[in-house]
Amino acid sequence: MEKLSADFEFERAALARGFTCVAGVDEVGRGPLAGPVTAAAVVLDAANIPPGLADSKALTAKRREALFDLICAQARVSVAHASVEEIDALNILRASHLAMERAVAGLGVVPDHLLIDGNLIPAGLRGRAEAIVKGDAKSLSIAAASIVAKVTRDRIMVDLAQQHPGYGWEVNAGYPTKQHLEALLNLGVTAWHRRSFKPVHNILYQDKSVTP
Image (cartoon, rainbow, N blue to C red):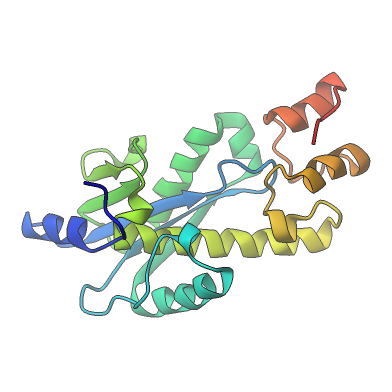
């Protein structure tokens, strides 16, 4: 039966099996044409879980911001990225896994069990992890990681939008919206665009039109 909302059951089950430090891991930014892919790893305090924690996609931006502050204050948090250059060199899946591995490595503790959003476990995390499809809607630790990753990446894209106006990154976070695609044609490709992604690649190397 599909869970209706995230809870702490995956974490409790891991703790009951003898694990002592359980972290949730999630990433954001696979789909955009521009910007890094960002991952977060979060170890929640079972006795001090921020109220209202839920999948970042189910929350308003204002609520995500508030929860971001609570999570950072009440949990152990690490954020990491894979760059545009790494995305183009490795492919977006491997780059997103690299960001996850970096986030876990940055926690300051070594979790003995990881809850990973998705259906694949990054190569560097095998042996102490379980993949949970739609984990951000099922596990509070993964939900917390999804919020931290999204808020962090959104802030990066707002900053980049000030340096590169016209693409709408402050509202589309680099995703291929109509405004973004039209700006690619009219303003060109920036250093923050992923050259391995088809709409960008076509403009650079094939001189094909991009259909918004």
